[in-house]
Amino acid sequence: MLRRLGPVIVAALLAGSLGTAPATQAATPTLPAAIPALSPRPLVAFSLVVPVSTAPSGLIARAILPKGVACPPLVARTSSGKKVARASRPRVIPGSTNPAFTALRSCEAKMPRNATRAEFGGLPIPSSMPARIDRLAIVGDTGCRIWESYIQDCTSAQDWPYARIAQRIAEDDPDLIVHMGDYFYREETCPEAQADLCANSPGPIPGLPFTDTDYSWLADAIVPMAPLFPVAPILALRGNHEECFRGGNGWFLFFDPSWQSADLCAPVDGVAPTIISDSYAVDLPLRGDRALRLVVVDSSNGSDTSITPSLQPGQRAAYQAGTALAADAGESWLLTHRPITGLVTTEYSPPPPTEWTPWTSMDQAAASYGLLDDYGIVVGSHIHVVESVQIPGLPGQLVVGNGGTLLDSSTGYVIPPHGALADASGQPVDPGLTPYPTASRLWVRAQFGYAIATPGQGSGAWRFSLRSVSGDEFAVCRLRAPDLRCADA
Ligand SMILES: [Fe+2]
Ligand SMILES: [Fe+2]
Image (cartoon, rainbow, N blue to C red; front, top):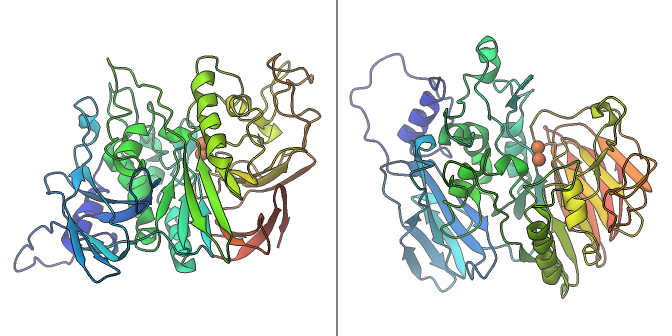
């Protein structure tokens, strides 16, 4: 099952890292005179954006290594010329997740303040938060889908273009990269009859209450993302594909921006827990005296189409914490994987009679109710298109969910007669929540790509360049907070 992935790992190990040699390097036809020693260098290393309460520099360095290789030191050079070496710590997973993570480990160290250069295990990584943001890259929903009858061709750079998109983002040289969540999609064993499409993609380990493994994370995220890692710090959000019963264990092992948090999704008595991560904020300096506060709320759990009573108190607390963080910022965005007011295609409607509406996600709309006024925009992904939705009285909703995962339909997007939190006949889905008015504007495009956001003139003004797999601008969104307008280029 893993035979096509094995050479990727071996090539990377022999080359010393994924960043210095293509993983597809062909084997030489003759035997080498001597087998080179396995390099102790990580496969990849990167810098994750974290709140300053976690690390005063705003960055945690992560390295992903073969199991058995010691955690390397983080070596940084500070602005005063001093060399600082910090021991890194392993992120420890418990025995209940171990069977799915037999090949890789993750190590971390907090980046020192005022670092001007940094290497982790010999690999150069971003050493500081940007002094000024001119280009902010946004990408979301990136893994290769293997689920029921939805089998994406993971062998094709046309059908699954995440690696190409990551390369294009790296070439655009952004100051910061935001991943909106949904990294992990190889959640089923590749059907025998379609093995040629799935590249024998690694499937779940039978008997475990979650579906990811380190091999599937390697294939879905770590290898295709490699071009991004040396370029800029990564602000990583958690999507619903990183819920604990799906890809949550790999998320917490590799990408979660908390210190020593690898065990949070570990099964308890054989059951995957429900975890809502703490909301946090990151401040980004812009031109002049402008600054942008990004508020991150974990919306990985819950339902798109109904209100989950058991989830609501914790999810509402997450949005309340986000609003408290946004309250004293001049300019702030809410980043959360599931859109608050996103529209899916009506082609996915179940047959009548039904109370289904195309608004998604209902749990998030209910939990955030009355808590969105301080934001200039809500950025999400989750729907596999790019989309903007304007609701009177709310910040514009931007969806950037076109990062490589099988796209949603390109047709069937219409403004429904009733707004979010109303059922199909216009009645409140919760008697305590007056439904929102319906949208005044909707724009959708189903095309692979990513966004580059640049600050415009004046507080709250931004330009989002929506770019294709080849980097061409195919549409532009302009934000005059809270007003968002998108149009084809
Ligand atoms: Fe998704
Ligand atoms: Fe999602």
